[in-house]
Figure 1 (spheres, helix red, strand yellow):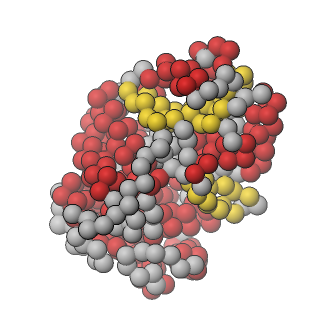
Figure 2 (cartoon, protein in one colour; figure 1 turned 135 degrees about the horizontal axis):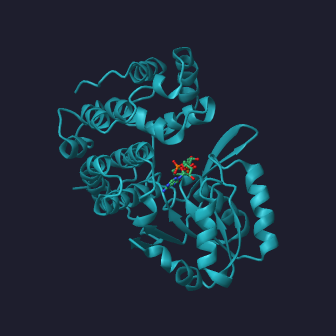
Length: 354
Ligand code: NAD
């Protein structure tokens, strides 16, 4: 029981279920728009074209150029397309990269956003935008960034390759993990974070057996919504900082980086707040939260070592230096020696001990 808290309310409308993509037109019109630009990555261009066709007159074009980390050059080109099309809303179809581009357009133009997530990365419920300019990624939070409507169509996640299914889910679990000890946590987010843990625990093994298991896909996407909400409404700490350091300065892949770091960052903070992280060990079963997540990651084939995602051992000193450069709130104090040890354990794939 939390003695005191602030619950800010949830502002994004959520439409969840198989086949809900058929409701995009209705949802865009509900926001008062009759012209929208459809966004996607180059990889999901065919899906964006199909969606635009189904929207008939409402879609005034597509921009299939979204890439990871929202480079401002891509945003500039997308903005040109947005302004030339006369659209007043964007429909972002895809993972965090496409959602990021939609947010970048929205924050510059006031456009409304309807987001249709196809991974579990969790950008859709948040007021966070990370953008890259001149090779440097900066992140900001603002109410204008948060999408108005999110349509979770379970059918669209059927094609998510199993490797990305697993790492994207671990990426999502990281949002829930840090929510348990967030200084601004509240009971609603805590309930969602707990539910997400058990939903991923149950659905991922089923998806490994059969990636097209509809009810497991629904359970995983529901968990992703819970985790995205946690990310969007409470503060994150060391885990997200380290993922940002590796993605931003060492160009490691987003979902895999989160997946690798998760057991080690959990164990690091567990020594400071064991009670707050107990729901993780309860959900996954095990002697400790960090150990339970390591075992779960191994059981679902998620990468466990920084080495496996291309980080060189010689990079660990520089990563430590970047991670400790600016002060930020974290349950366990941030010190160069202990962070360096954490990264070594993550490089060696050493199971955390409880
Ligand atoms: P992504 O959006 O780059 O997608 C990875 C690849 O998978 C892309 O080629 C995409 O087209 C493809 N893909 C996506 N869904 C698919 C599907 N269902 N079937 C087949 N292919 C599919 O990767 P991501 O991990 O979703 O997002 C990572 C990006 O999102 C990073 O830039 C990260 O910083 C950002 N992000 C931002 C926030 C936030 O709140 N601002 C939160 C989470 C992630």
